[in-house]
Length: 88
Image (tube, rainbow, N blue to C red; front, side, top):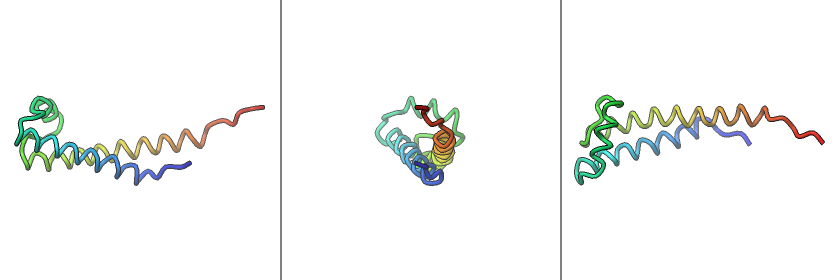
């Protein structure tokens, strides 16, 4: 089975973007995850516990998630096509 690298990248990217946005909104309006926001904003420029920070975090999450999903699918395809057949 061969994985579609673009589809895997989009799936992981959209999922990461959604959760980065959700975390920022929850931290801004409910106070949940404020400690996580403080740690993550050191890595992602512009990410903060606000609506705008959530949008910026969603962009960061999509880019990094897309790259991760693409690479995992690529590695899976690479190794699955090069597996040796068992000898009888």
